[in-house]
Image 1 (cartoon, rainbow, N blue to C red):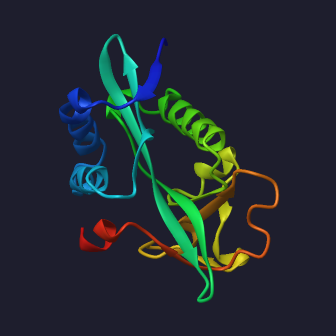
Image 2 (image 1 turned 30 degrees about the vertical axis):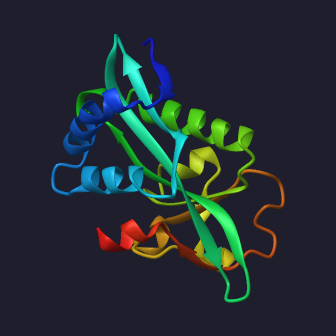
Length: 172
């Protein structure tokens, strides 16, 4: 399957909303993505679409966040949302979005990514549970879903604390 992964453009926004709504039919994840897009934490180079035959079939977004330990605020990124059209799921589109996105994160010099996600899915990309490392990822329904990834060796050494997302996440 020929897929092009590229940064989203304003022309993609309606298609991205549709993809997210179809991937998360019982949640308003699209509104969160739009709020993040309008926030100071939005990084245009890290909001990506997967396109096939000129149509958007997937989307991933990384936004700035921090891990606060009380004395220090360590820069991090939050991955989410990740959405793929239901009929295109389980065909590698999501994996390609994650791998490409993490590659761009590394290229841009980022060191840590956190997320709330399926504990069976994200370890294939190197994510580990955050709790045993002393990192709390709020808003997760389970500890297993709180995950973190060091993009560079040693990036998580001594890092502990509470993840602080964009303020729009807490308002959603």
